[in-house]
Amino acid sequence: MAKLYTKQNVAISKMTPSKETINFIINFSKALKVIKVGNKSFEFIAN
Image 1: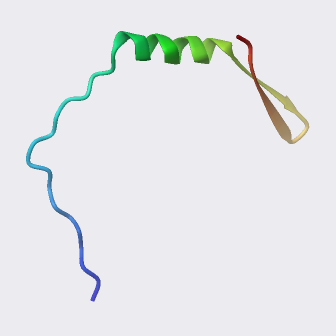
Image 2: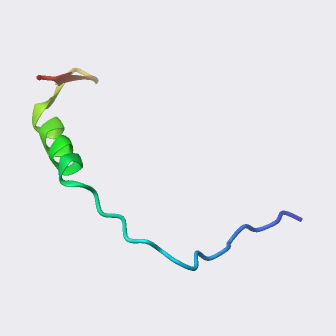
């Protein structure tokens, strides 16, 4: 028989990202361009 590992976490800490992390993700998403050519897609990061 397989052992089930379904232990519940007693304390769940709330994870909040820093402002620098949020700004990095927003700036990265603004710089990312995806171009589809036929059945292929190309990703470009314009820094």
